[in-house]
Length: 213
Image 1 (tube, rainbow, N blue to C red):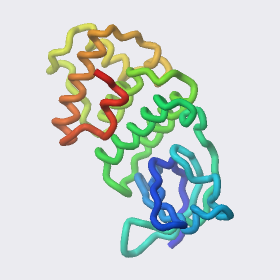
Image 2 (image 1 turned 90 degrees about the horizontal axis):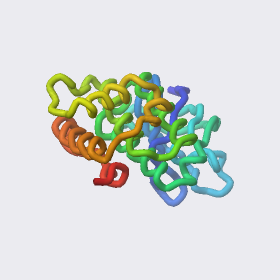
Image 3 (image 1 turned 180 degrees about the vertical axis):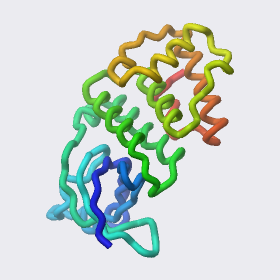
Image 4 (image 1 turned 135 degrees about the vertical axis):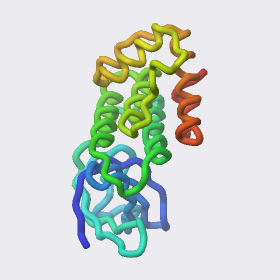
């Protein structure tokens, strides 16, 4: 059965000398894995269309026996090129992918999370890779997953509680403009670290790189 959707590439890896496995985030199908046969050949129709955080319309043949489907066609829409020009932005985008892979199930619709990630990647393309971007990402994703921390039950200082509330309520751009003191940064880093381990079982891969202590 052929299906079509829109997605953002979260991860790619070689399958054979000529083929790639491409992991997508989509609004209607959630996380989907596809095989791009021949994608590593220079004259492949997929050439130049499959890279990290590319957004595209695509179609695939759904497998009846596995969660790995055959990619048919890709129409590239957005490359988010600024992310690959800055190692810190790339690390922050990769952390978002790692968070999703840890915290979500495959092939489960998540339109709100898809919109969050799309907005987050757009932010990274136009703003510096600031630590509060990660705090905002974690808080907003936790909220969508039904795991939002109860601020009334936390021992955060009043000023840090206000920062948390602002990051949750503001859009990406306004959240990135918040100024955190060194003490607030350290407090939020540790508080969210404990919360993530408690509720997800472990930290998403790469957190220490994007939120240094």
